[in-house]
Length: 190
Image 1 (cartoon, helix red, strand yellow):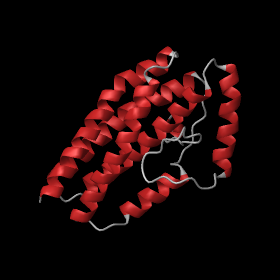
Image 2: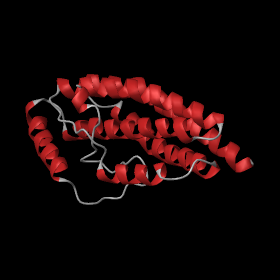
Image 3: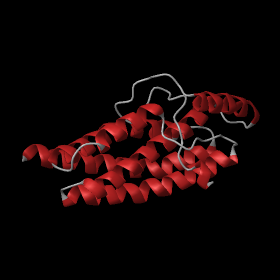
Image 4: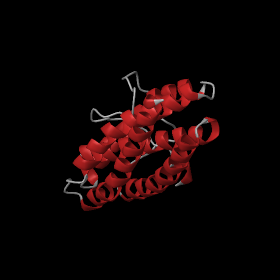
């Protein structure tokens, strides 16, 4: 599913990774949303469950890209290490999301959502330094806080495979959040 490895949060169920504001959807986003609404009726999967997969994939993709940025441009070794952890964990989670989506015929996009891409572009354009390190930690902390709530909610779904995925990976999201908070405290203490 290499051509489907980057997903888009179309029906965000109120949770975005970070700094996401609602803007107009692209034609591709609209087509995928329409496809996924049809699939909901056919696959014994609720719209909320489909939305969770799409949201989780988009946030995992954003997290992976932020992790790569942290490794590439981070100045503090702790930020670089955090980035490496993010890339490894997000890659693993994305692979499982792709498997779940394929099993339920949920269509995935090849790009980040418009808002996420805009936010990523803004951060990636920053020069390496303490300000960028701080922004990376801030973005991931805010995003993982919202994301963890969605994973905990999804762990209670009656759809066993989606609930099992959320249950398995909620602790990973929590670990990322704890690490981001710790790094934030370290930066604020300096």
